Image: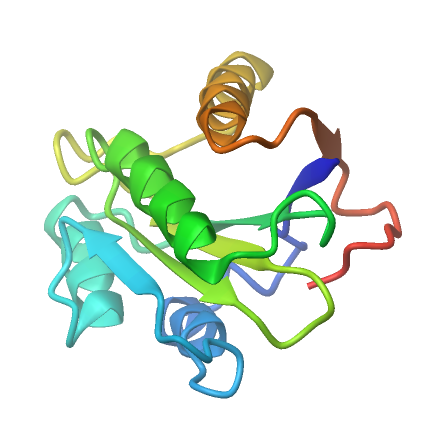
Length: 168
């Protein structure tokens, strides 16, 4: 069973350094053994700077800066990092229609997991991602369809406040 959770704790993602802090965390070489990292609508050498530039362009420099999702897999259901990489690519392609995004496949635990970070400000029209239930459910449905293509039968949402066996 795969689990998706939002990792947007209060305060941490409001900080002006959140672009670089979160992106630096998810792209740590010690966590991404095979280097499976990808981005959309971003300079891969300066993803945090690109996200920050979009926020400045649209005068949206306050509030939540990034959205962070973690998709964790049961080790018996998905254990091939290259397949997790393909899933990550599809997810950021979906997000990239409106938001800059970056992902990294983490291999530092007994289970694979993908960190997905998107800018909270749309690169298209400058609106902020509000995370309504409707928007999140569309995203969750897309992720569910995507993981099924790769043999993952179930996907469950876990609140960021809930403790779960698949911690990042």
